Image (cartoon, rainbow, N blue to C red; front, side, top):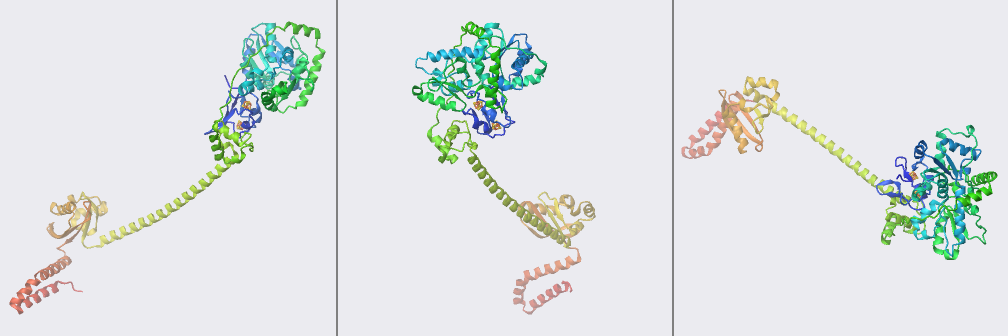
Length: 614
Ligand code: SF4
Ligand code: SF4
């Protein structure tokens, strides 16, 4: 079954006006789902939430398509009409035009509820007269009945066991027209839709349409009184029962005493009914009265057009009842009452207890502390929809509400959230600044490294000796011009295609005796200094040194056949000879005297002659 009311989550703006309007906490807000939802099992169909929602986010179960389907079928269909039409349709000049419009819509039988009210009113009169000290709560208002069934089940035994006027009218129609006739009740209350389901019996009402839905159908089918003749309601007709939409109309219909001093009935309507029911429960033995209660006078029901003026509608209803008087036939009415007096109007009720167990006091206290609202135990601001902070905390503990519904809690969390956002924002800004600085440093270092590399490369190129740097596979990482020239013409040509011979394999450029020395240094990490090597019939002096262990080696190669290197080398080598033999020469000097000094002088003269002239 489609729920009576549903919140459209798309349209809902989570303002919680509906939560505040609901008298029985049937609208729940859950964590991680800020938009509320209606719990059908807790709802009593008062319609307050629908009236409170300015975003039109609450939908009422639509019955128009169900009725259209029924009207299209070949079955006999009766409309049971609440007398509140007088207040709802003042734009229709005569109720008989209204009846015509209904016939035009497709209803074969149009029965006003007034006669059914009178049957029910008589039952109430009997009940009051024979109550034998027991006091009853009238059961004509479906909202009040559902409230007692769900939240005051202890009072079910005090609900008057009499069918509501809509059902008594349904039984009249079925008695007169047969059991197969289909019934549509046109009601001023949305709760009537639920009541029809709860009272399902063999005389069940097939569809309940609100006055608002009926208006929409009139519009859709372009039904206009101008084009229609008068038509009267079907028999049996009622008279004073048409006052039923007023809260004391049922008393008026049965001529039940309403005088303050002598009446045994108290009539209560609107929100005070909850207090009245509470008092009935606590003090009925002292109050000693029956309670005629209506959550809303039918004339102002939630199924009527919003914004209606209560006293204007009341006066329209009274005018309507006066008009009905002209066609009222008291004898015929009395006969009809007799004819239908055997209709069974007994009713039972559901025990549909929806009371929630009270949560542990410590939990409620903890929630109050979290809300920082210990002060508001007794009275709150009401913004959350609960009468006090304590009640709100109980609802949170019962999983009906969330702390964010408290405006001061929400403001505080928002403030905390903004503060934490501010802190993380500052941290982010600091990190960004630090990143910027390190990026600048890295850029600087990169630039310095690039410059250093450029300088080294230039210096290498300027060196007269050949210089080469190799990786662990003897591939050239860097080589200077002198080294390339030293390798010969082929290498010079390759250099034009691959500058610096980068990536070239040394094994393909030099013979084994040469590159083997590089392999040795790479494998053993031992430098080789001034090793003579022959290549291309020339003699070279080779020094190989470790740059990165087992990974990179470098070498300086000098061509001993070049005149500068030759002189330099001879000087160096003679110096070595002089140094190495100095002690020997000195020893010989001791032995040979003057002769030794002469030898030294002679060798020094040779060295001097080879030293470069400046
Ligand atoms: S009244 Fe309720 S359903 Fe309507 S927008 Fe506000 S929270 Fe949503
Ligand atoms: S119809 Fe009434 S009881 Fe049901 S959810 Fe709306 S306000 Fe609450």
